[in-house]
Image (cartoon, rainbow, N blue to C red; front, side):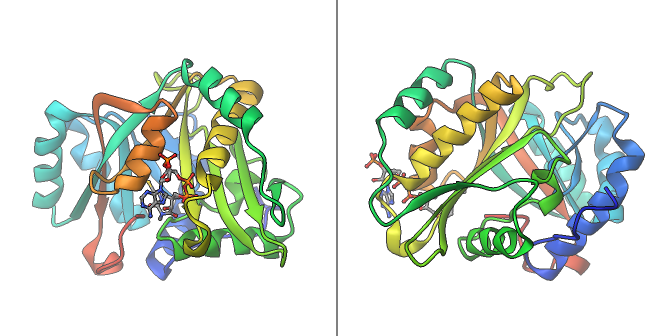
Amino acid sequence: MADVPAEFFGAPPQQAMQRLGAALWPLVSANPRFAYEGRFVAIDAPDVADLDAMGSLVALQGGTGAFFVDAAKEAALLAGLKARGLTTDRWDHLMADASAVPVCRALVENYRVPEGFVLRELGADTPQAEMAAFAAMAMDCGVNAPAGRAFRGGRPSVLFVIADAAGDIIACSGAVARHEAGSPFADASWWGMLATRPDVRGRGFSRYLGALALLAMADRHGKRRYYTGVRPDNAVSQKLCRSLGLGDHGLAVIAALDPARFGDVRLTR
Ligand SMILES: CC(C)(COP(=O)(O)OP(=O)(O)OC[C@H]1O[C@@H](n2cnc3c(N)ncnc32)[C@H](O)[C@@H]1OP(=O)(O)O)[C@@H](O)C(=O)NCCC(=O)NCCS
């Protein structure tokens, strides 16, 4: 995607990982075991036999993650990554199936964006300044947005934001289908990127945008499963995601980071 602006977001090691991941993806995208949403190239549903490959992804990008981790394998995988000198992290893998679609449709139909606020969709034609403003707002909430190319036609994706009367972006949600045809997860989409500026939380912005993003992945991209990583102690996000129909499936999300490059920086919230 030579004509796409270099929009890499987050703290320096997160930006570096996005830049290196963007360079790596074209080399491996034909192999359906790899997935990419604009932050890092990953191997999902890894086995212990994949630990060396995950270590290689960290060596190349500074970090990697894995969705669809079988909870029964999680401890062995995290131990194996730690034994390779890597910092690890984990989230609950919450997921919905197509039964979430009518729930989200009803929610979207019944919600009115409050006066003074406006819904916008970002995509291929979004000015770079607006894409950067979205990513900065998400980052202020601790959420590392994928590289802009993911939303500019690089991946099947959607991205919705709400702006206030001053034109500032105050809430966002998006989704990126990370998997290629041939993957066992080709019917599924990573979903979330939920972030709302602290002073306007609790008004339903995030639930509305999240529902809109899920619905758009179903209607436009034909995705039938929607998943995200949520920390067990993120009570608001846990409640919000579960209210949209995402739940437990005996799965986890894990991450491995090069401590020399990431230090105290996390992959995302
Ligand atoms: C999670 C987050 C996006 C929610 O945004 P929001 O726009 O306030 O969410 P909503 O207004 O749609 O609220 C969703 C639910 O959470 C509740 N909620 C929102 N803020 C809350 C708070 N501070 N304390 C308790 N409940 C809260 C709402 O009341 C609502 O539940 P209800 O319908 O039962 O009343 C926001 O808190 C945030 O940006 N957090 C930091 C980033 C983050 O954690 N993102 C998720 C990563 S997985």
